Length: 438
Ligand code: ASP
Image 1 (cartoon, rainbow, N blue to C red):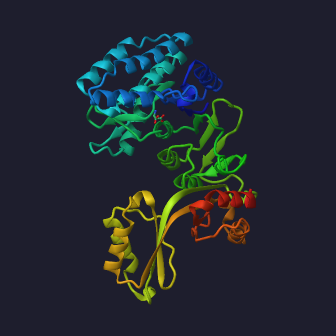
Image 2: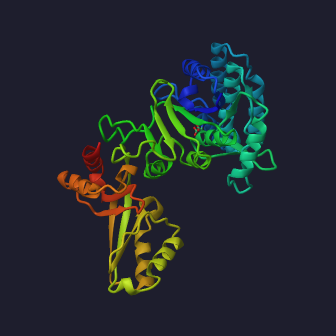
Image 3: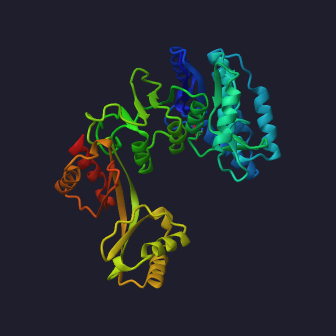
């Protein structure tokens, strides 16, 4: 018998119907022993996520506004779900405690974490599994930095004593204290990966409301093909460039323990979804590309200086200035007498003129040019590795779509090609690339 860790997102535990589906999925495979849950999500368009309501309660309290009614809405939602499921659990005591703690002045992390806490209590009662709290098992230091190894040890030790358990996602505690600390939003994915690593699971199943990853954003490309298999590395590239289904930090724990992640759809459990693992099974027959993702709103700052290539430390000084501005750089394509830095407009935060002035003052350059409103698009896939003509095919597709290519970069691992285009060409460029390869 194996061990599967299954994480169910907010939509999978949003209401009675969804929770019944979740139970059916869990019970259809006895290997599904460790279950991680999110707080209940939206039940319909326009509904509220429990986590958002909890943050709202906190904000009301912080501003001395009444919050009791809001808290009652959350209480009622949990209680009626429990009653309709016939689960043997009473939430009155929990809500009394939450209300008291809030009145005394708790942290927003504590408040937000109660969604996962109560959700796990409910699902554990409904399934007849043990409830095991993440507080005291998932650790952060007092600056809020996640403590990976300490957490792994504590989880492995605690879960040894539970054959089947439901664990709340999203939060833990500051080590050595009772202070609750959460991951960033969507962080239950991370808890799931941590549990998978700690119990040495055969697979980490991440149950959500989509059947895995698609090759491109369906808002841009009509009916994009699903991705059945993707490597951790490819996924990192795509997530970084904006493809989102799984929390970015959920990949690392699974990757170091070499545990495949299977993204599955609670509403379509027979769909195989997407499997994320170290390598593709069948490298020979891979499609050329695995996926396309991109982001808008970057600025390219092109710096020109005669004989730049001969000058030692030039790029280091550019990076030093970016550091002074607390700006990350995304790419630095360079030529003989020029180098460009690509920076996100978010990082620039309206300071482009100051940054240009700093470059001019400190670098003794000939000329500088800025191209704002640029988009970056990553085309990712192991299939590109050592295959001839891929970049040519991509550039031709863009040319045929009348897209002006402003920048192109290929990673030396040959699993990605990044192109820079103007924001206005973002969608047509993605469609052109998709149609060329998919
Ligand atoms: N409930 C939290 C959120 O809405 C965490 C999660 O669902 O993963 O962000």
